[in-house]
Length: 105
Ligand SMILES: [Zn+2]
Image 1 (cartoon, rainbow, N blue to C red):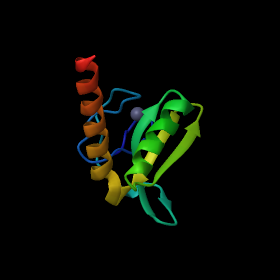
Image 2 (cartoon, rainbow, N blue to C red):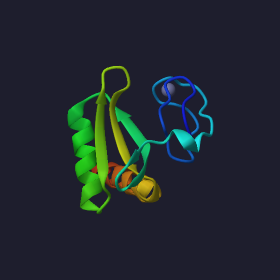
Image 3 (tube, rainbow, N blue to C red):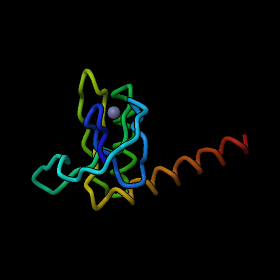
Image 4 (cartoon, helix red, strand yellow):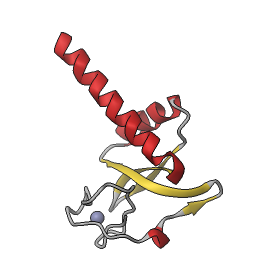
């Protein structure tokens, strides 16, 4: 999925661009390609620190993550297309675990 406004790439299942709040359109040809395969835009952060923390989390689960910096688009985290669903799951589970811990204390 791609944002028609900023050309940001998103994984399947994401419907709205987090930066522009516009509906995404399907355009698989616009995904960037690196040596290891196709990358999909996973998430956008406002700080390098947050992106680095997310990258570390993914790498704990053997998911390669790439951080790109762009003055207009922010700090973007990319994952390989085949890892995208795994990455989403890791993030969901991590967020849930965090919430559970917060409830206890
Ligand atoms: Zn956008």
